[in-house]
Amino acid sequence: MQPIETRLRVRYAETDQMGIVYYANYFIWMEVGRVEFCRLSGIRYRDVEADGFLLAVAESNCRYLAPARYDDEVVIATTLGDPSPRMPRFDYVIRDAATGRKLAEGFTKHIWCGPDLRPRKLPEKYWVNFGIERAKSN
Amino acid sequence: MQPIETRLRVRYAETDQMGIVYYANYFIWMEVGRVEFCRLSGIRYRDVEADGFLLAVAESNCRYLAPARYDDEVVIATTLGDPSPRMPRFDYVIRDAATGRKLAEGFTKHIWCGPDLRPRKLPEKYWVNFGIERAKSN
Amino acid sequence: MQPIETRLRVRYAETDQMGIVYYANYFIWMEVGRVEFCRLSGIRYRDVEADGFLLAVAESNCRYLAPARYDDEVVIATTLGDPSPRMPRFDYVIRDAATGRKLAEGFTKHIWCGPDLRPRKLPEKYWVNFGIERAKSN
Amino acid sequence: MQPIETRLRVRYAETDQMGIVYYANYFIWMEVGRVEFCRLSGIRYRDVEADGFLLAVAESNCRYLAPARYDDEVVIATTLGDPSPRMPRFDYVIRDAATGRKLAEGFTKHIWCGPDLRPRKLPEKYWVNFGIERAKSN
Image (cartoon, rainbow over all chains, first blue to last red; front, side, top):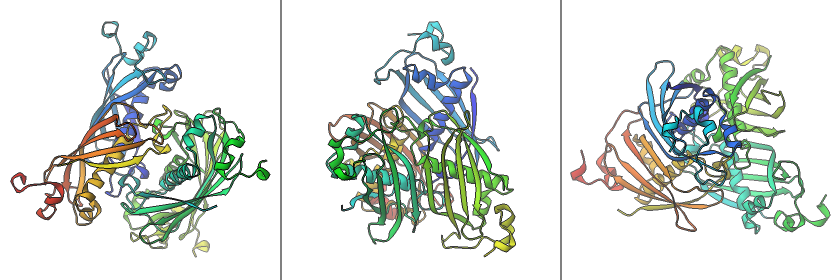
């Protein structure tokens, strides 16, 4: 499975007084990467959610290697590290678009839930979009 | 009607690379002021919302007089400038807690809506909490 | 002067539990519009800032006409409503990209400042980028 | 070393359309916990920063156990898990204040840096505030 690349430009709002991007904002970028991952795999995440399946976050992690700065263009490479109809994991590498320098890497682990936020296995009709093969379905 | 005062400490996340609080964050503080206004008038806004009445924002305005900085304590004085069961307006004055210096002032105009986000007049049982007198009920 | 159009897609992080975009986030979008305005007028705002001129915000205003929702694409049309080397004003119209429906409109008034956040007139070398004519220079 | 407890109330801005707190915001709360940790250990982090020592983030992690919701009061218990004048680690447990239920736990690893964001060992005068003993000074 190839990584899906998403580009965005660092907003002023995303910086802090250290003059670099505030650390929590990388997780917002990962979310942008996840959504584009879904879109490019043929589905809009919002349609999945409207259908009653929410991708709740169970764990998030980021390692910061070099600071991103205001107005930089960054590239988020998103991979579905662990396809699963129950607990998928996405992996991310964030690079400076101009130089290719790696700025951060991380992952998010998820649980597919229903609207009541209780675990709910993703139905087969969506498996192709989330890289799930029949053999891995449990 | 007396202003309701709410205190908060400026978070690092709220600053930007100019070394001061990013301008959009004052609107988050106004929301914190509104919620405390409700609480001190005897009601939790979340209970009103659970009851099917949402306070959608129709207009927001802020004038910035002096910068707020990281770790400063600020006081938000919230007044219900225009009580109305349809389109209330809240007014805010934000001061530095240590010096009393006025940092910003602004307002938010609202529309009471139902869960479908269509206008929905606030029922009489809530009027006392939102400073509405019978004569102003239309 | 033509409006500069910037497109962006609504992030999940930008929604709130009302199921629509939280009202403060429109001001972040206006900032994205301002930055693109600068870029398309031939200058990067970050270079102006590195040169010692900061565009501090003096007032901000937004009227909300229809809600923006997660994953919608929105277009921000930014105009320099009042070019001035001291106190410029930007105007914004935010539309749904798919339908053209107007979602919000607003403005931001600014003061050009030095790194000490005291007012500092923008020098002539930047006037062409900020639509300032000689006659309006005071 | 006892955990330092900080209380805050969940803001509407911190929720997303899933009706719960957006996952990136827990890292903002951890920052609030860190700052209070410093304050209660006898120092203001902003003074340390003004003195030329920045606590850059090298890694962040959060495990989400139960959702926090709008208007809930949460308690952040912050511990200095690994005192170090070079690469300290803070640990956090976030609980619902009303029920004591654990909502999330996580950590942040840091590097003390100078204003140029290059590693810079924290000087001895601050060690007592950051729980560093002489023996662990390298």
